[in-house]
Length: 190
Image 1 (cartoon, rainbow, N blue to C red):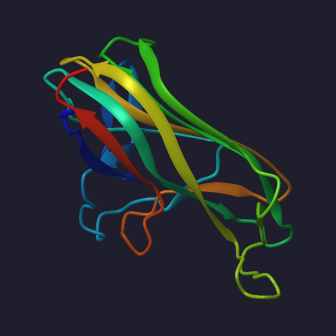
Image 2 (image 1 turned 180 degrees about the vertical axis):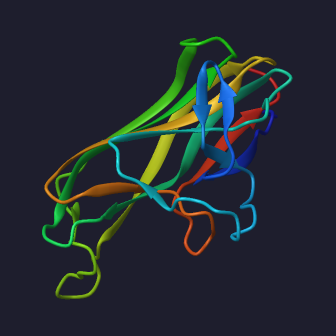
Image 3 (image 1 turned 90 degrees about the vertical axis):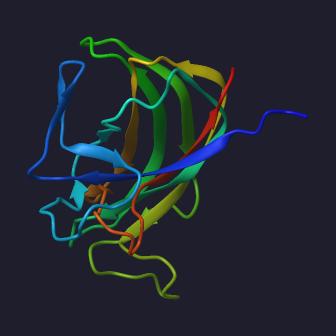
């Protein structure tokens, strides 16, 4: 009988009054097990072509990640003048110790979009009402027996390419809806 792994779900948020330094980088964008109070001052989205979210705890003793990390991420169009097209996006799972530049990618998911990839201008909806100024896209990252050492933390990094509009990566601190949600499969042995 195979050893069953356990999934942990993480949510990506940005807290304005909290920062954590690890590996020479200071993070306001964090991965959390559950949302903290929605009353905390936070930023709902980032206008940049990449964003990195650190889980501020050590995850293992050591541990292995083995299976399919799955979830979704959210993009917004902040432009009131033009619709945007999301061309592609990549979500990477990275492990790193507390040494600057010592990051190792242990899994990655890239998706090139050729249909249903229009993010309408801010406040706009498609004629049938199904598409809007928000686009939620899936993540299914296959990871095969990657070790996370006792002194390492994990980072989720999102990058994308788009044309037109003003695309933002969503990371609202609250579950209505979840902007970034990733389930990671942990296994007791590799």
